[in-house]
Length: 464
Image 1: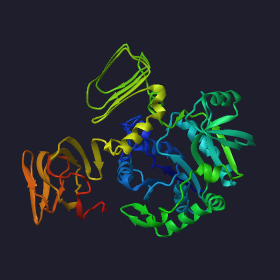
Image 2: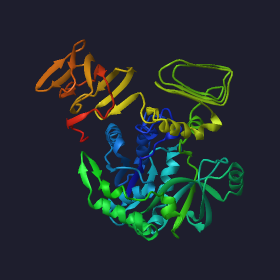
Image 3: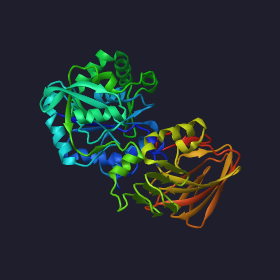
Image 4: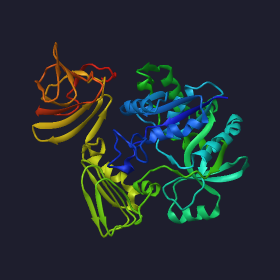
């Protein structure tokens, strides 16, 4: 028997704005520990000694995945979706990568599980069920009425679990209390175990439109810098649907195994507060924060002093470019802020001030009508693309390390306190050939500073 881990890493995490944003969502952030949530998910599965690993992400996040895997010495097949189409198609892409008879363990990259030993034992207990053709889902035994999760009603016994009687949408508070009191319901964790071919067969039966597109999309798959690329043009025609609606609610072979493993999807700031160790006033404080007469709150500051006085039950999150303040009981609705920013064409829903790239990162320190200032960090051995701009010139001042700079056909080396000028239209590149970070200040002057004013001629990361 072979078992393959399939980790879904394509979410946007907008309820954890302003820390989590579209271009760097929560699964790639170290929210609960020094490891990112993706890395924690991978580490949690290691005791199972699985045979293979697949991670599914979108185009913009592929380098986050690759870098974070390298940091923990984990090897996986990274499948890139040109655009998310929900979980049913994503899992189908993974199933096509697996041999018949392989069990697929599906999990999300952004969940937290405190009791990892019980979690491992629960997964192992489901192998025989999955091998017999069952579609196993792991239901979380609720410890309180929660309106943010879907529910699963247990039916007849199917040891070590129960047949699924029905899936239920997120309830209101009164209904959630009834579910808790009845002891007949579990939270839907979104963790599944089943045989790969069985999934493809059920998907073909219930959603032949999704099945057909995915089958065609993987026929044209290619390998690119350790990534698996499917046929983008075909996949973009795929309908969007979740595994719950497409398969689990329709199959006659769904089984739920109730588990108590300290599970949380960290879907909001309130759920993060619940999972953190708090002080004597029941506050979680991180960063440069001073509080007086404050209770039951979460306060995080990334780079500035934040003070609170005489309040309680608040969420306060300050990043380099944004501040969120909300009542804790409203934190599930923070997504609305991100949506409003998108409607107003503001970039704060999309990017943090500090932006990560495969070669390193940059921090947008200041900007005005005709200038922009960035602090650029290039990792050892990395190189920015050979490029030019039509609307801006650039001044580079080295702060730390040594820069190898290409200017048309000339290559020069710059040490700390040295600088160079890149005029409009000049073909140029920046490389760090040393064994420590290269840090420089970039001053852009011109009429337009958008990322689309980059004409790339050569790029070691395969970007266009």
